[in-house]
Length: 154
Image (tube, rainbow, N blue to C red):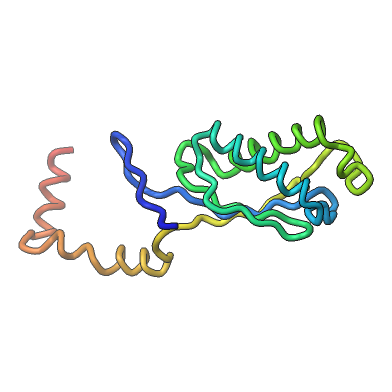
């Protein structure tokens, strides 16, 4: 799937993340297909509510990978908190009997998480662009004179 730039009234850009969430005590609860399906359903419901797109979701026996797109209205910590909190509440309230013998206590997830921002370009490409492509904007302009005029108007 190709992720396009998201355009809003006054902005355009990407705000995509790869998250990795692990169950409490790194227990292998995702070996159970019912738990995987429930967690995935709760994830999709929460991302829809937040107007975030869940591009990809996959599980290991003791972790979940999620690729989320269109996250511009939320900080990374807020996204993790809302998604993990919502899934945890629903799983504890409605399905504890499926994993209660494996995960004990009052939490479904570990406290931490992994995240990485994802874009259509690499950090190296952005660095190269910033360092090497801006001279085109100054062709035919005496930059030193331009700076002086800008300082005089302050």
